Length: 342
Image 1 (cartoon, rainbow, N blue to C red):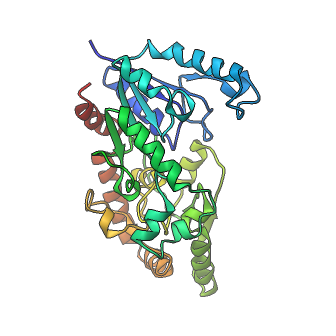
Image 2 (cartoon, rainbow, N blue to C red):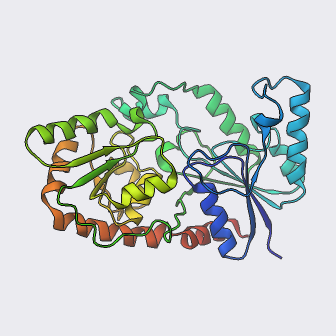
Image 3 (spheres, one colour):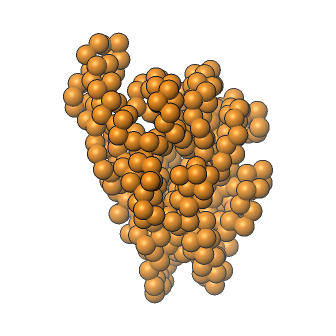
């Protein structure tokens, strides 16, 4: 009998809904339960309205709040056999539910997805000029993150992460191939813009290097290149798809050293996608057809792509083929299932 699978308690770039859809397609009983309504309108199965139940959610020392949290956790603990958690969060604050799940012999998986375990110290130690961390203004408490990871590692059965942000992990981890619904992210034929459309949709303009991208675009315009640059923020998942489908060139990020989910979505649409990739992170997937660019050469890369339509089309097709091979929902989830022995 197949295990009942819990996925939660939050969404990040469609990963939770992707795993849920893929597991169901393969015949598993999987539910995505969230404490937070997904910002970009990703689908979910159940919303546990923590903040709605008690407005003072941030005051975690309040007994009534803890009672509500525990009740909500108990609603699912005995219903599921396997728990897949994302971004370092679980059923209770500070992951206090993990030893309970372990004692109940539940299978526990943690999928880390970036700054939940990325630390400024380790990134700058690796590269003292890492603008991703030098320009980031978010609080980055290294001690807190290391303690959290150490605690989580005691109880989980499997960890999924990527080399780019796995510096503080001490247990072995598996590479995350983010599942993408290639039927939703499908190429549109006969996009033939007279003026090349360049789309950039940063989730965080500082982390994505947006100011350097804008500078390169303005320089190209000043030199007489005709282009339609679309800088978009805070739009829904459907709006993201529509704008990416209309693009000739997509820019993900030029500071981080590895790609985000936007790159996979754009590649699935057969778009040549610009992203900064460090050599040390390419070991796992050296064949990835992203167009490598950083803040120092983004102007040259964009100029080349604008001037070479045939090359853009060729890169786009290779990109679609790559996503179908590595990130299509059933493919990514099958690998996931094999590792977990579900």
